[in-house]
Image (cartoon, rainbow, N blue to C red; front, side, top):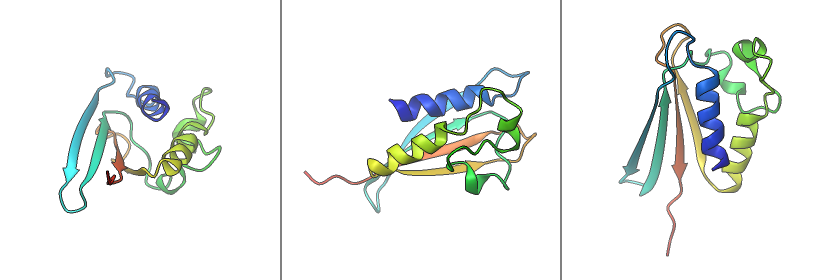
Length: 114
């Protein structure tokens, strides 16, 4: 719940001011690896390519986040840490700023043997 809450919170926080935040959730199955993938796509401002390698670093806010007083740089750090502890892979793909195509965050759940 924390991971999803943080992702939703960031999507709303970094939404385009003139546009209502839009989130799309999609579940896919990778039949080759039998893993379940949850894709979360927003219509926000996106993440600059130069910031992408650092978004999970503790305290990193990037250029966009540094303008927002409510950005601490802890949210995605904690998401990654918790996901790693649960053996969930987190992937991020973002479109350039100004395109309003936003960011897609994927949570890749491991195959579980019963």
